[in-house]
Image (cartoon, rainbow, N blue to C red; front, side, top):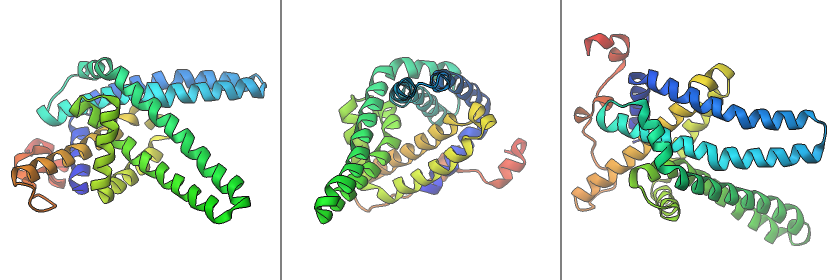
Length: 264
């Protein structure tokens, strides 16, 4: 299933590279604004101001800007997957439609991550010095909670766009998907991390950073949706439904189509 998600993400990006480049350029330019603010505050030489600006920029970027723009990209990716075509207008429509809920999700995850990171440090360093076994056990539990939250965060924006639910129902759905598909979600996270490292290069950041990541996550969610639709159609029998690649153009191509696209 992960292989199919990667294959779908590749061909969606390949077929609609122009739209994704423009959407990604818009996202990158927006993200440069708070980054410049934090950089300017750091240059002033005032540690308190730099810390305050850094925290504010981090919350604004991770809790609001990134989720809202990710929702727009996921909405565009959904249209590209469903119809094999799409418009850049869909990207802006998605941002406008899901802005409030996407920002709510972002702030929930920023708060959760802050609490869990603090717990990992506190229980290991403070409580661990007095009651080692309890401190390290709680620290490990908080660390696993942080990993779980990170995995659910990968699916929450595609889930929001696909299901259109509220903040808490989306978090719940993402959590259930991770619990039911742990290996798939870990594999998806590994590929997102690899892609993310590559996207940190300045030219790539401007042109292809957020867009391919969201296409990959949307493709992953699409595979999960198809899995459960197939299982429901079969009455829940089995654990891995058969996928018919012949009915999906994105899944029915190979290396020959990449080398000779005009022969498709």
